[in-house]
Length: 146
Image (cartoon, rainbow, N blue to C red; front, side, top):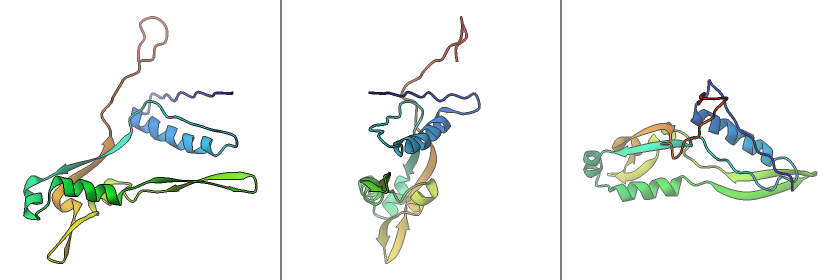
């Protein structure tokens, strides 16, 4: 059983950028015939951070749980399967609605007095990398650690 391991590294790229490149590479590798499994390890995943404003939530009569449930129900991504055509295989994925902070800010979380309440009305949304869960050190020669 052949196994291929790739390590991405670069002085000009941070952990989040390298993971994004690795994710794109991962999608391309999945398209290669007879590839059964791929796994991404390391790097920092992209993360949308939603900071709720309790005063604004209260003004609209909303709770953090209601916001979380709305967010989850409107942001789903499903692996739908694979299609084979003319000896080519294509992965089918139902993409999520929320791809950026702007998408999240435009999410309707409630309707009050026949007017939509958007996430931006009750929260601040930022787009960035998740907090690191682990660190990896790379060394070349004696005493040279990166």
